[in-house]
Amino acid sequence: MSAAWRITPGYLLGTGCFLLLAGFRVAEGSWSWAAIFVLAAASQVYLGWKAAPARPSGAPARSSRTSGGVQRNARIWRAMTASSCLLTVALLFVQPVLSVIAAAIGLYCSWMVVRTRTVGRGAEV
Image: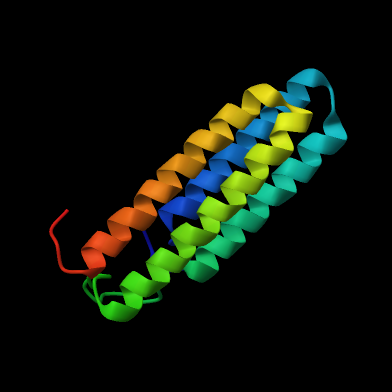
């Protein structure tokens, strides 16, 4: 994958979920909500592209276990955890079945926050 199209995994997961929501809305016939979710997916791709570490082409992949890289990853996962929790609460009122998916994503993001902290301390995961 070229450096220009590199997207962090968390944002890729968010993009997939928004596209899934768009598909559900299209199936229900709600084209306006589908368009909103497609725009949200596009914004996830853009944000993921901006959040991806830049490296020159041909350079070997560096480990993100440096102090700055670990802190940055922890911040990203914390932000995704918070947004997943907010999305879960919002979906409880709009589409309760989908709130279960958002809650599962929030749990995964929380696990990644803990895992990132463990890696930051030097423990092997």
